[in-house]
Length: 125
Image (cartoon, rainbow, N blue to C red; front, top):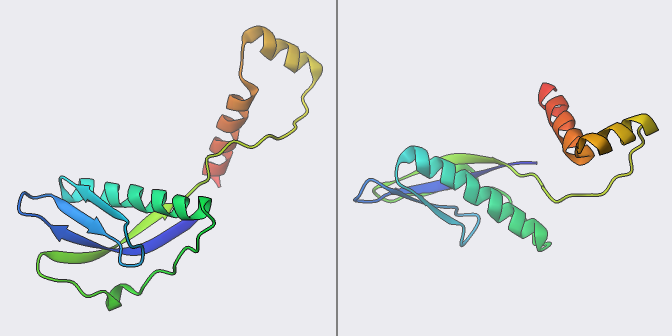
């Protein structure tokens, strides 16, 4: 699921940036450059949303970017995070017996093959 939140970037004296989310108190990140800060902000947002979700906490709505007030040396930017639950789930699948015997001999992981195939198929759509 995709989430988009406004983030406040504060420009530090050393050229680094501190990033906070007004809607997510305690969600803070830093980056050595603006590019690094953008990546770190996205990672922090993803991890924060997963944390809230894992703890059955309410995920707050994002504020309108226009409503965010900033001080000197600050600017607001929207950060998008595609949050995916990476926990493994068990599924029962059926394959022909000859395939099962062949993959066992070859030492192929059916789980890995299925994950790779599904990832490729989902990227095509």
